[in-house]
Length: 268
Image 1 (cartoon, rainbow, N blue to C red):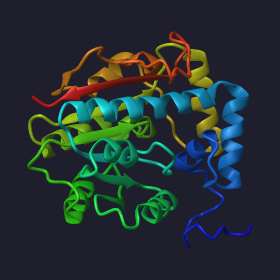
Image 2: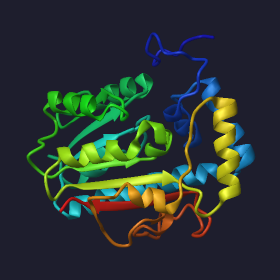
Image 3: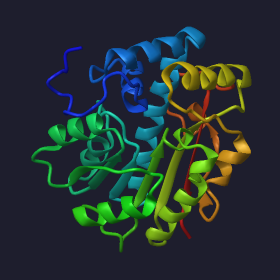
Image 4: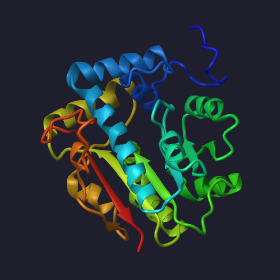
């Protein structure tokens, strides 16, 4: 199997990656055959799966613009995936060119591609880090100097917490992030759910575990809302992706059918 020029040495091209599978669903080009096969298997089970990915990206854009409206100008995007059009730094720096964005991602392909895109952008950077080790992630984030942890931070957890099992203690990871940022900071979370289409969620979860060997953990509304403990939820609370402060130009899913939930909280 020929290694593409953009793929770092040492990356196992026979194992699927959530970041690269997501890139494949969005129609991106930085993925391997195994990632495309895994994405296609998911689409065979749930044909509207690409719409869920697009809906998540639309929520990202709306959430970043909302946080900018609240005066937040620096963002820690964890589990950021493969950079695509409309990424956090593009949205934020279009509004305020002095905005600062740090991407943290476990997939070295995503980190390498992000660093290539961000060359010359002094207000943005990417690090390889693991959300399951929040202390190490935060230490690496501080070392970059991109984020000033004395000022409010927008902590972005888009489609990443469902990659952690309960044994990985995702709630504790969110709590550690909350403890690291000052009052007035925000968290934005999107997460796959069993709330609306439990049968489809079960099929996708089983397929991910059995075929692609990627653990995806669909959670209930109550479990996802629990990640906001210690944060003040902003309106409209934890809702389906297309229902979080919708805009007319980015409705990729029909409300009542979304496989994802989303919410934003403020640290008091």
